[in-house]
Image (cartoon, rainbow, N blue to C red; front, side):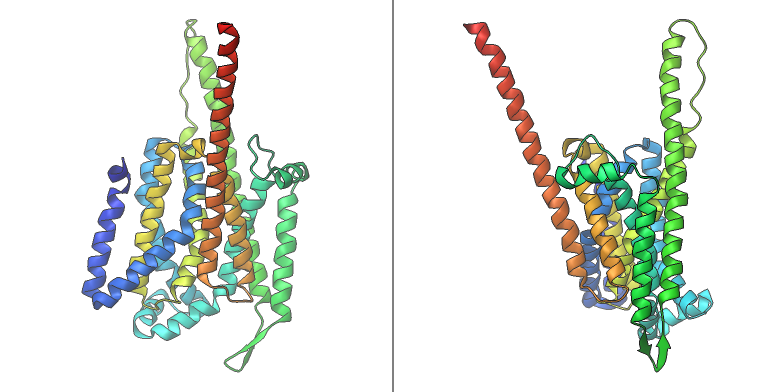
Length: 378
């Protein structure tokens, strides 16, 4: 099971490390290995959240997620995305941006760093909406009941998560505007950039998330109708085919890709603290992204989220923390180790709580069984 799920990840790791040695020697291999570990640690919560969505898809779309999806994740976000950032921020053509990445790596890194406020605003708002929509939903299973129960009641207010997100974005943009800084002798004010990028992240979430939710609801309705038709077919009535699953799966897949992109922002930016070589960056982050994808599928096939019910809660709290950190990094620098550790700690706590819950339920069921056996023996 492990080899079947992680086989491609192992193969990509081997090829990536060999390519690193051929490209830059043993030093390059060490850099790629560090970047891979960085990506896995920063995106572990991404795997848990993705698993909660991917388990709703059939085997075909899970394969698409591992094949087409990984191409988008590795080549799109880890290779093309930094180049696009440079091209837009420096008003360069795509070819010029690629040439800059290889010919003037320091200048390339500086341009990506200058574009960080807009990247953080877009990704921060997208992730913040995911977190808020999760905690404002009234769920049967609650982890931190003392906070989730009152928040679920607040969630009955329409558009509350959107209002909170816009207030947070406004505060972030005003803070940046009030602390405009000097760069190269030029007065730089990122307030408008942050505001527009944050609104872009909010709109992206509402469009992609809204479409995926709409088709997911339609799919559930069609599945219920199919069950009724199956019962009717036993009585000799005709049965119609289920046709909505393709659209639902497509938009869920699209939602997953945007989600993965938002999670990868901190990894791409953090990678520049280790290297400004675009080739080594793509190799290291690509290997890490492959493991995150495989881990997502592994969690789905093992039914881990069903067994450890608080894992999804922990992952969403990690998303909320990451969203907050991204918005803070618009103005202040935060070490990537802190970003990665927060996610790991929150998921670890949720796993520990899930284990305790399972043991308590097992003990309660065992106690109930003993109680029923005692009277019968008297």
